[in-house]
Amino acid sequence: MGKRKSWTEKLNDVGDLPKVVKIEGKMTRRWGEGTVVIPSPREVYDLMRSVPEGKLTTINEIRSALARRHAATICCPITAGIFAWVSANASEEERAAGGEGIPYWRTLKSGGVVNEKYPGGVEIQKALLEKEGHRLVRKGTKNVSHRVLDLEKSLYAP
Image (tube, rainbow, N blue to C red; front, side):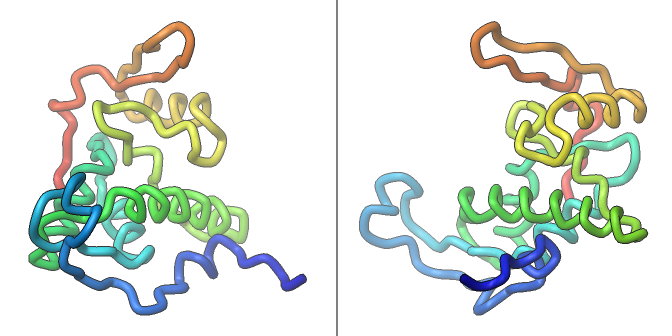
C-alpha cells in the first residue's frame, strides 16, 4: 500500500484541471444545457484566500466566480465542495508547519451555514467567525447547524 498524500499534495495535484466540458447525458436533467467547469483545487484555494477579514463568502459565490472566469454556464458543485474541504485541510497543514494558511472559515455553505467538515468542526469555526465580529445562530434540533446572521451585510463575491 502506498503512502497517503498530504492535504498540500492533494491541493497541488491538478492533473488536467481546470477543464470546461459540455453538459451532456444525465447531467442535463440536473444542470440543464451549456458547459460546466471542473476547477483545479488551487483555484478554489486562491478564491478562499481572497476573502478579506470582516467579509464572508459562500461556496456558491466561489462557484459563480469560477464559472465566470472560465466562461462556463456553471461550476461543478461536487468538485468545488471537495476542493474547498481540501483547501481548508491544506491550510491547517500549512499552519502546523509554521506557514500562514488561509481563512477557510470565511467560506460558508449556502445560506451562511458553517461547514462542519472543515478542520476543528463547527465550534472552532464559530469561535473564529465571532472573533471577527460575526454573529451566529443555532439552526435545527435534530441536525443542528450554525448559520451566520445578516450574511448579506458581510457577503463578498470573489
